[in-house]
Length: 429
Image 1 (tube, rainbow, N blue to C red):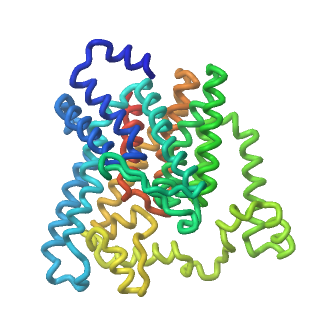
Image 2 (image 1 turned 30 degrees about the horizontal axis):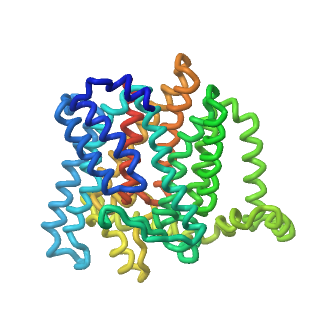
């Protein structure tokens, strides 16, 4: 890394270098000191905008320009209709605040491509994502030791405080939520695997990487996050490549078969008891018995059905940001923070059209990146593994947000748009 900066900067440090260096510092601090991280990201954005022309010439920006206009109009409609709204508890100001979750990140998507427009830059960013996640590992270790802080620097501008595991039930580290911690660690996992896979390493570095990878997988398992566990299973063979399927697929099929016997009620009880005796309870208890007679009674499916009903009532401009929990409580008497599906959440908030536009753009970028990765035979194995890491990391984000939502944590949303910018840069490289 030091050699990289010497070769790139040397004695010619200028405003562009300042923007790039600020971006890298922002990436490094994103998990552990998000307030400081945002300051450096803002510097990188201002620098990037000052020397980055052609925003309207890039057709990939069109969906986000359209979405910006659309959700802004939706917000205005929410203010206009607020007095005649049948549900007084819905605050149109939340729609205005909700724009912060999207419009600034559309700009990040454009600017960050400047800092990710080469293989070397994406590899370095991947390494920094790993380095920036080490404090998360450390915070998890402290939580296991029941050392929970709070720890403060800069007069409380950066605060680490872990809830005791007795309260969270699982490892959550400095995220204070096991699902948020799980998605962060499993999105970073492909970069760890890529670095571990590189053959030309000094022995001491290889040992250190094995230790880091062990820490990541242990942390992911201890979060008890089903999304994180599934993300681990999905991303690993993508980074390792098709040659790994010879041993990975049989191992995965056998493991999933054992798990299915332990939790599916179609198998005899004696079989289930036996499987539960050989599978760690931490794993099979994450997947309770599944029946198919009353699918609507399952919490997630129940939320999806409710969200679809809300969308059907106001499909064009939606109900307003953060309206799902309010409407759901009025309709069901139960409070629930979100729809457990990001496309549905956007559609409830701003209408079905921006939801479709955003997620179709995600899908197209994933598709073109996949197409290029698996047709490109000219790159070195290490470069190709790094691109697979970028692809699988964003794929994990995408799939996870079909069944849960962690996006509204600024650390996760920023990570999302960094990955998207990296993939788009690779597509057009």
